[in-house]
Every structure is written in structure tokens, then in C-alpha cells.
Image 1 (cartoon, rainbow, N blue to C red):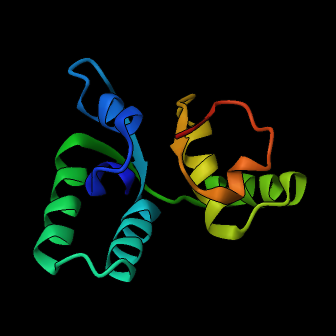
Image 2: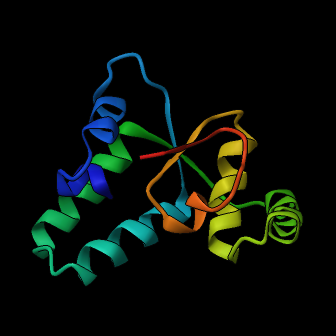
Length: 115
């Protein structure tokens, strides 16, 4: 979401890199839409952000296996449900989770880049 709001140069660099293979959890669409609308971002800009995500990202869908692993992550790392599902979506792809979510700032999780 920081990328779409122009609030993070680090996120911008990662998102706009030509050689980046970007994954996002299907739940990221929920998080971006909710976050942008809470900040009163115009609906057209929200729609544009979601379209960019669709074009630039490989969307990781939820599966039964992913949800079970995310439940284990939630318990082990004391994560909220949606955070553990997004974290597991990245972990299953051996990808780095890039986030500004303050809930991750307190955790010491591997493959998480805080921006």
C-alpha cells in the first residue's frame, strides 16, 4: 500500500524493479483496498492500485495446506490470522515479505523486510 500512496522509496524501488518476481497474497487485495479507502483515497486511485497489483504480481491463492501452515505460524509467532496467511503465502514461495505492517515490526521472522 505504501507504494501506491508514494510513501516509501524502498517499496517503490522493489515494486518497479524490472527483474523482480513479485508475489502477493490474494488477501493483499483486501488489505490495500481497505487501507487506501480508510485514508480516503479516491476510488479511481484505489481501482488503479488493484489493477497494478493484478498486472505486476503473481497472486498466491489460499489453499487448505497454506491455511493449516498459517495457523501454525499464527500460534508460533503470535500473529493475527490475516498476517499469518500473508506471511505463509510468501514463505511457501521462498519469497521475502515486504511490509510496513506495525505488527511485523515486533516479530523476528525470517524473510520479512520492513519498509
